[in-house]
Amino acid sequence: MVDRRSLLAGSLASLTLAVRTPAQVLPPPGYGAPLGTSPFPPEVFRERRRRVMAELKTGVAVVYGANEVQTDAAVAPPFQQNGDFAWLTGVVDEPGAILVLAPEERDYQEYLLLPSRNPEAERWGQERLPLGAELERRTGFRRVYRTANLGGLVASLAERRKELRFLGPIVPPTAPVPPALDLYQKVAARIPGVAIRDDSGLMARLRFVKEPRELELMRKAIDATRRGHLAAMRQVRPGWTEAQLRDLVEAEFRAGGGAGLAYESIVGSGRNAASLHYISVTGPIRAGDLVLIDAAASVGGYACDVTRTFPATGRFTPEQRALHDLVLQAQEAAAAKLKAGVYYEDLSEAAKDVFRRAGRIDDFVHGLGHPVGLDVHDPGDFAKPLPANCVVTIEPGLYVQSQNYGIRIEDDYLVTPTGCERMSTGIPRSAAEIEAFMAQGRT
Image (tube, rainbow, N blue to C red; front, side, top):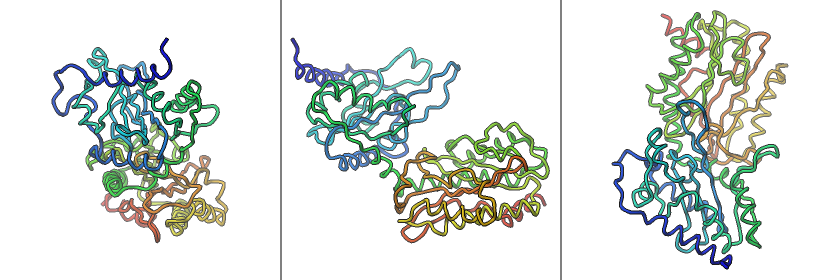
């Protein structure tokens, strides 16, 4: 009979053998997934994993990457990697990948697990690398296994360390159990004495504070985004469609160096602008309409988030101008309080006070903003004081469908020890700036 220790030891032996594959003809550089780490070299991600393990100190942690979207369409939608996994590994082009961290281990503290190859499927999708030295070089991992070995690996580590560290995500009772937590529960049910510890706030805390290299990519994303918004203000005319304007904006993002969209673009005119996440772009742009554009480019996987509202004709009506001024006043009231150490809720209350005094609080129907970074809604804990070098949006708005308008002004702010920096500059924001800029494009 094979006892538990022999079984676990056998699992590790099979893992060791898994990397000893015969010599193979490898694709040349630039071919075969994963292509490498993105947007930084492997040592950046290795250092991030070291920071996480230094915080954990003990136990075993598993982080799942995103799975490929299942679809009946002939061409699948672009793959979007899980933010925590991407931040820790830089492996953004491998669906179904898994990271295992074991800070107490002497020899190997980090493992990357990738799904097995399917040569037939690769004929239709993308060629993938076999296990071996080239895969390890590209990813920066000394131990790369197949995901079929996950259970044996985690069981072996847990049997020694007796502790599984859950890095999230926290989900409501109606959602499926996160795969890491599901795995932990199964391992704990089979290995006596294994405890599950909650570290679900760790990744949010680390990712909330931006590294200089992250801020550099976000500034590049803002540069591309600025070009799209300026083109929209300069060229829009009554008679255009929302779809035409969206296409113009996104083309300018690409021309300005944007590598993708930070999120699906919102371009709403008139009544459509009062729908917060309107993405249909089926409406016409009419004289007298206010046009709301909430759209942004991404660079290196890093997002920004910018919204502007402007008149289709280039001139606000007196009522539109007064409401636009009120929204800007709310944004500026919030930004005036923004600095490291404050609570985001205090910013929210400052903006709401502006709307309360004007009798318009019921027309502000969403939160004031969110962290932004690798994900457009990046992790961060607004229940705690804001740290220096985090980036947040401030995006107050007023929405009244019955009166055919929605007005939102949104910018990205870098929090500093003494205040904040509005990063998304250079896009007209006040009514006077917008009218002056749009007049230049109509002469």
